[in-house]
Image (cartoon, rainbow over all chains, first blue to last red; front, side):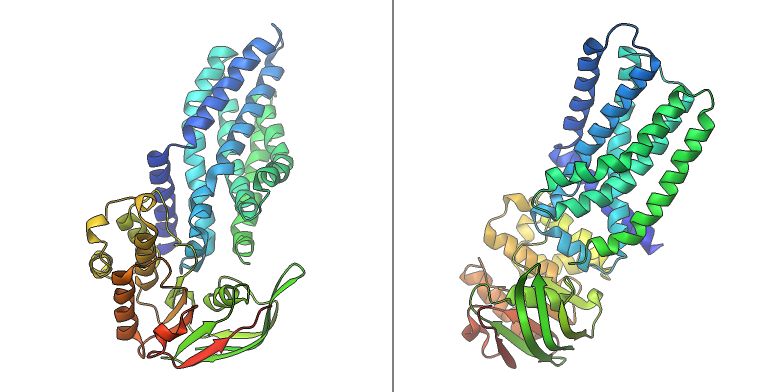
Length: 212
Length: 196
């Protein structure tokens, strides 16, 4: 029970920081909408559903990357990471609290971005939305761990995309597949498996990531 | 409370600490001195459990729940208020009667009136006072303090003098400082680190 309280305390703190500083969500929203607008004019007429779905996933992955790059900034600025690591809570709670907050940001962006995508390109069916929801979990689980690793480095802006994008490829495959395949169930199952496996790996390895 | 033998710490090829022996008994007050770059901060980070040694043996008796740490940085969220910062850490440390304890510390360190201000708006001295409140918040058994008098004005330094004097003997202290004379009346031992 204490573990869940710690996760909730840490996630609530991140939401409060974002509501106060507003330096991540507006940037993510602007980026994803700008991408849709640019591609709306850049893609030739009749490019098809597959191209549009590919574009959606490019936009979502890079928008998530934008949020992930900022995710540990408050901890980096005041050396707060040390304070959290010293606290007697399970260190994986730090990761889970941050991943939960990033998930809230991502979902908040998608509440606007997915209708905007439907407006610019084509409506999404239930399987595509389920694919996005499942991929969100994987993005947040993996991305939050990698962002914590990158945060300790001087070249964090460079390292995070290099680490994150290769690991996001299966999510893009699953997401696009669930949207365009006549049998989306296979792809949704694949995404669920990815989420489960990587969530366990990230949960178990965070302790080692934060130890000097 | 802390026992180290041949303690070493390397970052890549750079050896920051070499062959440090240290004994700190419960209730002791050990002052660590040395020039810049001698490894004082690294030693304190090792003893606080923030880093792992590269060599040698290090035994620390209390687990991290009973350690209070003050570092070079305040370990505080700049966009949270003083009260929100202490409340966050109070929850994570499961401080009993958290609100009363926070109110008492803010009052004692002269920050009660600024409790609803964001840390970003604090002066360096106020931030240091708040960092001290955070380090003392859970009434730790072992206090690891890195240059605790940094940025404090005369009044703040006197407050800290009184706080340290009231806790010395009951709590164990490991303090890095460039001004060991100030802490001389409380000191039970001194460790001088050489330039690495």
